[in-house]
Image (tube, rainbow, N blue to C red):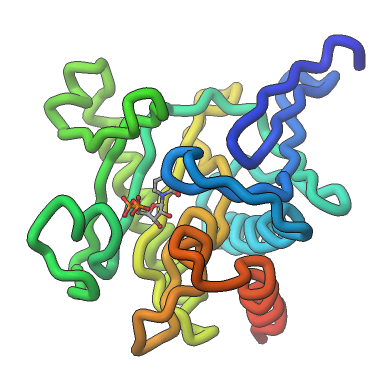
Length: 235
Ligand code: UDP
């Protein structure tokens, strides 16, 4: 394992393995906000984010969404297909919140039906700017990739919104990342946890996600564990 490569992300570390098509992703006990400007190291956070991600990746795979998930290794390492990440963050919004309300006159809490699907450039140095379809085209992304990302994200939204509704949470918005595997297939990658989504207690705007950390409003590990327990106990 001397030639293992390590890629450190903000809250996850990716290790290459002796198998060229496989990586190990370690979920760290770390949380960041504001593009890394706010940081904390809550014990147990890596494990619960991995558990929720594993649960959701499996549900999506069951429903025909191709993902990078392979298996998990106790207690916070996920074995995944190695993918070439598409440097585009796909955000789906069911309810207006966050940057959408900061950047427009759309009021927080307004329902967005049909859901709004947005594309952002995955580049922290540029502060992840919002992309337009024309910009994506000029950057060399095909219309086919655009359509594939969009239709997959809408399908993921339908599945996840239904799962969270069953534990009385509203899926307000979330961010997805995709990559191509060694066969050129588009796979859902990264993580699926309350770190990259907004979840409100149904019928309220009470956060059960990373906004608790962003706004110093509560213990994310406790809340994330409650979410995982509820998901795990779903019939
Ligand atoms: N998001 C994310 N990583 C990012 C940007 C956004 O996980 O780099 C998630 C965020 O948690 C929220 C959704 O995508 O669930 C929409 O985020 P928004 O554009 O509203 O930005 P924010 O208000 O979080 O800065």
